Amino acid sequence: MTIEPRSRIYPWTGFRLGTVFQLSQTGQNWVGSAFYNFPGGEAGSFPLALTVVGGKLYGVAEYGGASGNGAVFEITP
Image 1 (cartoon, rainbow, N blue to C red):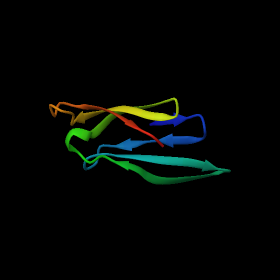
Image 2: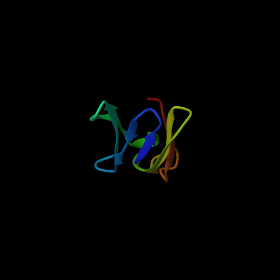
Image 3: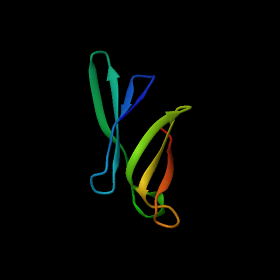
Image 4: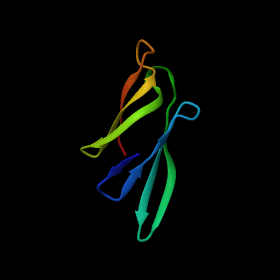
């Protein structure tokens, strides 16, 4: 799980090919939605780590990339 300073949390799962979720705080409530679904192939699948840098999400996936041995990815919220 990655927490962004603007009251957003980005948990992820490796279920199926992998999904990043976005939870946003509005007052006392949290609203969640699927934010990014990994397509597999060179784009990657099965995310292992995620961080926020400069407002963008960066991470690594276990599979994907040109050789199929993993991928580094960037997602812009």
